Image 1 (cartoon, rainbow, N blue to C red):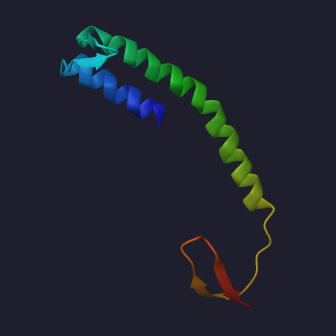
Image 2: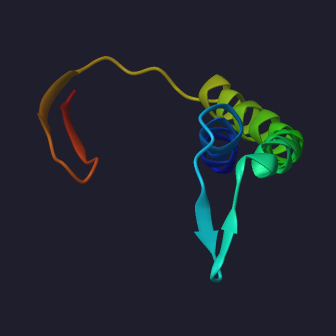
Image 3: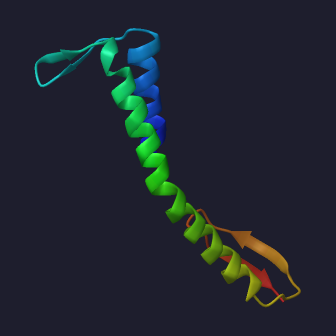
Amino acid sequence: MFPLVFSGMAIATGVFGLSIARRGRAVGPEAGSFFAVLALVSVAMAAPLLVLRVRALLGFFQRAVQIEGSIKSVWLSGRVLLSV
């Protein structure tokens, strides 16, 4: 989420010249590069966590046991009732 927000701020300030008020001070177009650096840093920090999360999910599905059945109902909370 942070990379998207920082990228949006970099585009808004650097490309479109949007002025943003921060603590009573206006942040002008020169802050575009600052937000671009923040976006890159947040991507660099989040990428390893994303890789770990994907590996954990893939490992979970590889250890799963396949069963035969049909779905009877699905609840909004994520509960699924099966008939085997």
